[in-house]
Amino acid sequence: MIELEDVPELIDPVMVCAFEGWNDAGDAASAAVGHLDETWGGKVFAALDAEDYYDFQVNRPTVWLDGGVRRITWPTTRLSVVRVTEPKPRDLVLVRGIEPSMRWRSYCNELLGFAHELGVELVVILGALLGDTPHSRPVPVSGVTSDAALARSLDLEESRYEGPTGIVGVLQEACAHAGVPAVTLWAAVPHYVAQPPNPKATLALINKLEDLLDLRIPPGELAEDARAWQLGVDQLAAEDSEVAEYVQQLEEAQDTAELPEASGDAIAREFERYLRRRDNLGPTGEKPVAGHATAERPADHEPGTRPAEGPAEGSAEAPAGDEAGDGAADDRTEPDPGDAGADDAGTEIGDAASDRDGSAPGPERGPDGDEDGGRPGV
Image 1 (cartoon, one colour):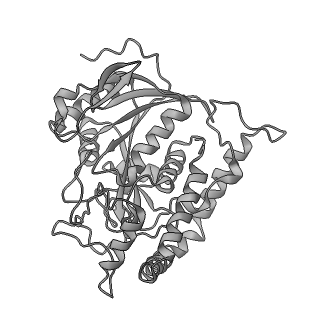
Image 2 (cartoon, rainbow, N blue to C red):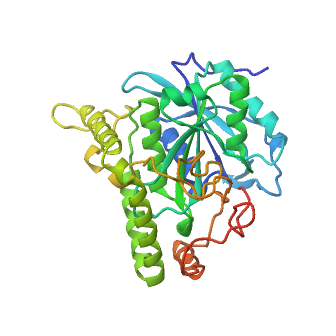
Image 3 (cartoon, rainbow, N blue to C red):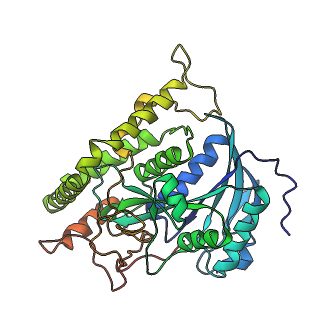
């Protein structure tokens, strides 16, 4: 039996989950949940028993000093709750942890037990994958669900993916079997610059979540960080003519695929978000009161991070055409979204250039669609 005596009665609760490791390319998804927790001062009320789900030789505990006393932090999954006040009060139950090493069904059942006890009405799972997407364009973010009715009501893709999956896919299916509405949001991270962090992809997930739940989520420093990240990658790419040519090819392919969308609904949604954040400023243009879900700098919103509805090629859990949008060349390939890449962005970019075959540049992929040499979930 799950005891939740310290948790107050929640208002229209939604559970938002992210898991470090295979489904968290560039640490974009876990950073998005971390941003929500930091923005509204989340309070941890529960943690899963690490002994039940983790191999400590894979996910090692860490030692730290607390006033001269040595303590150990064990890898686990923690749950916290935050209250959003704009445009109306609503509670978010935040689940942030590491993809478990074992007993995935029990792990999902335990999370769903919390969801049931808390009266959660919807589960939103955030993920990030490596894809053939240029860093200089809006980050493709796709929403998928296994519930046909939910797909119609929220204008989402109904998942038809077949192939290897991670804890994100397992949890979504567990929700479906338990009758709990669940949605997964996938952000595509450029495979040639996969080294975390990726604030542009994190901001794109935040924007998509904002639209899905009709919330006002302050971007904080994410907009500035996203611009700085893109400028840094621009400079590194400009130093290698082959990489610059490859990026240009990706840009042309994405621009061609998304031209109709860029001129229609995407622009309208971006403008609506700007108006929501602007309207929450006071009559004198002063910044909002701390703790309210409003943008501190509405004019600073990064237009380049608006999620596009175009394809997220080379997807992991959600390949384009299924869980990452339409238009994939192969809807049964799933690269490893947890691949950490090289030690720095420059090495990632150099690797991408050296692998070019002159016609279809990109990472080398194994028979199951994964990039060779992917790192294990952490």
